[in-house]
Image (cartoon, rainbow, N blue to C red):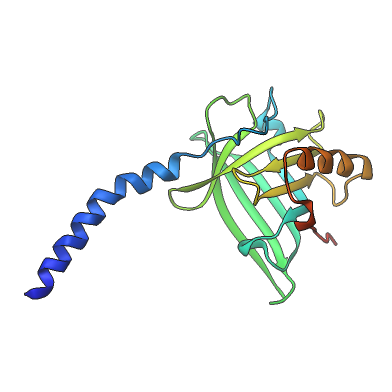
Length: 181
């Protein structure tokens, strides 16, 4: 009986907090100091990308041979399939998620989710016109990816992406170069 008071209080707080949690999950935005690609075409972007470099974070730690594959779904969302080989556990990992445009479908500003209603920013800020390479930045300076349709990227493009990231204030000492076999 004495616990019912605590249960009611907990439930009351949960009911009050849920709308704030879901609203915060939807508030993905483009950072002020970057501009996303204009005239973005998701059909051209779809397909397989090889990760050339990234900032390491929990879900990609110790991963090589990392790829991301994007495909259009009938409901207008984008299926995201990330794969990589965990060198410490000696096993392949795979995670499926979804992506949506933030607003305008001709801008490279998307949000990606691998965990229910929780989205993160996915901003395509530089790309070769033939959709062969892409520089993607997250909502914060904790996330960055150099992507290529091939397992390698020319030094010219790498240097271009490094300059863009440096100019945007990214700490490039954190850059991990992904091994692709």
